[in-house]
Length: 114
Image 1 (cartoon, rainbow, N blue to C red):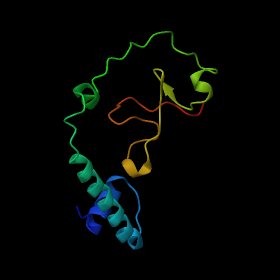
Image 2 (image 1 turned 30 degrees about the vertical axis):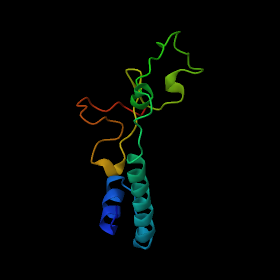
Image 3 (image 1 turned 180 degrees about the vertical axis):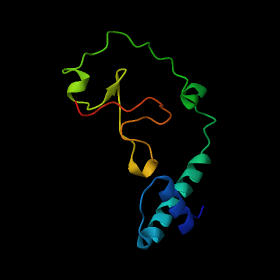
Image 4 (image 1 turned 30 degrees about the horizontal axis):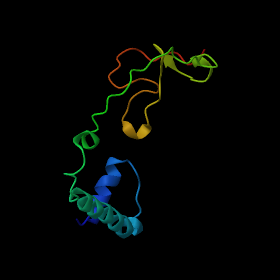
């Protein structure tokens, strides 16, 4: 499969990665090579491989034991915590959300001045 320069630009935009035009030919060739390799792998005959190994239907033991306690309390190394979860600021390139507010969260932002 041949990947075009426009395909590379589109993939870079989806990944929010800047790509210099001088790198387009090399990246297009590299991505084309990866897709060609995947096409070869798709053609491999796996009919002799047992179905359990192919489907990944492994029976795993249940998790057991108590949770491992943290060495320090969460607020000691996480600047913003809400309901036991770390609040990570939204990247400026991901829209106009306020600092420290989750997408879809209508609650007011916590006061960081304390």
